[in-house]
Length: 64
Image 1: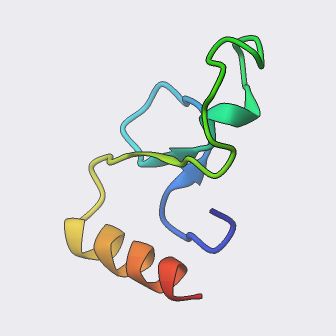
Image 2 (image 1 turned 45 degrees about the horizontal axis):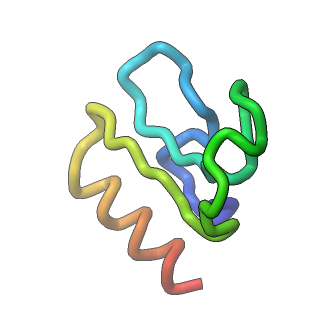
């Protein structure tokens, strides 16, 4: 997640930008709200950025 440049690492900004989060890390809900979630699970919500930019960013981040 730290290698991504386009999506924000945030649970929600109330906007249209791409976001990336780790649900097991908690956030606004109780940390034990969803027992059994793997710690390495990542949630990606695509926003309105150019698809090619998002794909390139994800590919670059996954390659590191």
